[in-house]
Length: 276
Ligand code: G1P
Image (cartoon, rainbow, N blue to C red; front, top):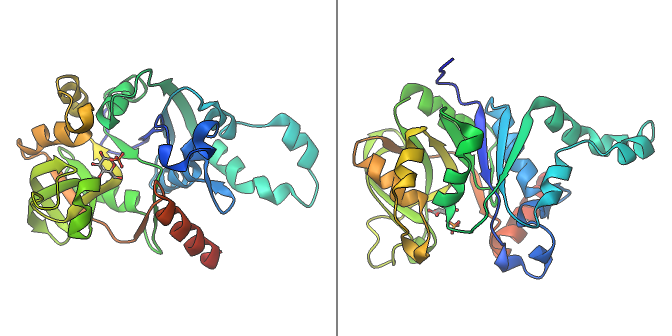
């Protein structure tokens, strides 16, 4: 049955995590912990909070520990059951109970757009969310994904990207949008460029790693040529849909940490430590 409710969430998790070498030689960057919880689990919990129950993860070589994490470890359960340490497993048990996980491998690293297209086999013909786990978000109220699904319910023919203002000198780290204000904090996008030079950027509104995508995106991705860095960019595919008036950008409420950088990772660690 067709539904406008977003139940599926895609997690591209095939990247090398070069900025965290040598740790990421044998440990997926998505498994790096902020305090005691891996980045990817924060993302999955955000998706669950937003009403999703089907997690689709695009992995690559050397990422098997992700599958083990979201599964029962019988040996550990046996060792810990009935002891004072059992509570350490509460959160992950609850995650495993609430949703299903499926996996596919991206065989070649051809960019975020290509990773998302690789996930088509897990998503099918439904609208879906995308979470880039190294953008860690936190909000006292509704999570960023919840805020976005509420907007999607109102605009079910559109893709939605989350944005925030960044310093002008940082535009070359993000997809940058240009749009007209539609309502409070919501823009109709008419242009978007992947990582423009600060001097060429049309705004400082940067896309962060939260997307709601309509299934039409897969068709567009199939014909999107390699762009910035020789990679297939989701930003370029979205531009095709933006030209048809089908992309909105939402300035979300909440905090976001760039845990793909050492500075952002340390900042997030301190923030969650103080909060705990
Ligand atoms: C990706 C996207 C970029 C977006 C960013 C958010 O870039 O290509 O448009 O702004 O995520 O984190 P990456 O950080 O993977 O280079």
